[in-house]
Length: 332
Image (cartoon, rainbow, N blue to C red; front, side, top):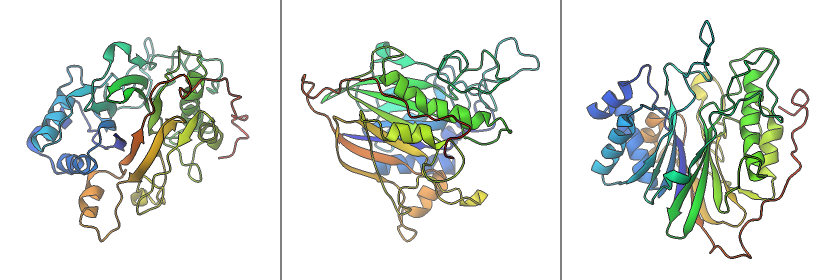
């Protein structure tokens, strides 16, 4: 069973524009479709795809995929925090940057049924309201933690239930001396350990954490302690996928940065991963040009095998000592 995560960079400057571009057969949209067709994942987590209330944009996108032979009969897209005003603020402040409400949201596409009734969305959790977070002084008391959302979505696969824990963290840049975005990025990553500790309802038994963490463990901005804490959590197995640029998943050469690793799949330690990769071929590969034209990000995939849910092999949640140091002294 193949799972994948991909930051499509399909966000547009206004509502309805992406829907128009999908219907017109826009070049970038078609390139993204080709990337997804090449990956042929069974379950797919997408980032940076505009959300709308009626789901028309995602519906048109899925129809475009189906027209080229790749069918995803089950989808989920919940309203992101991007572009959403904090109630009562004047001048208006947003929970997260977004050119409009719903900008650059997330979506799940699946060949298997999504248990929508059991899906959990933690997008409304207040950043300052959570006792373990590190919001700087001056953060609005109603500011939400999630840049887009934190979802726990059960999918009924042929091998049993699998929960996808999905998010897209804020870039740890574009802030001031208070490092608000760096701290928020770290707390968005740390949230998953608190969820696995049972602080926000029963943790799932079989799961993967998947999405764009917007943080490279060895370079760039961002607090490294939260990321390393997640990587070394004994309940998890980081999947070390590689492509032509090693473990890097994004090409930011256009803004003067080296390739970085920001998209990840982490499975629970009871899942076997016989194969994984990053859809980043070498420059002489005929696929290279269309993949580069689709998005600066590269699709990350993993083939997973789930054991039967017996008492012996179900991951048992256990409280972990969070290894998040004082954020002002944590390694960057």
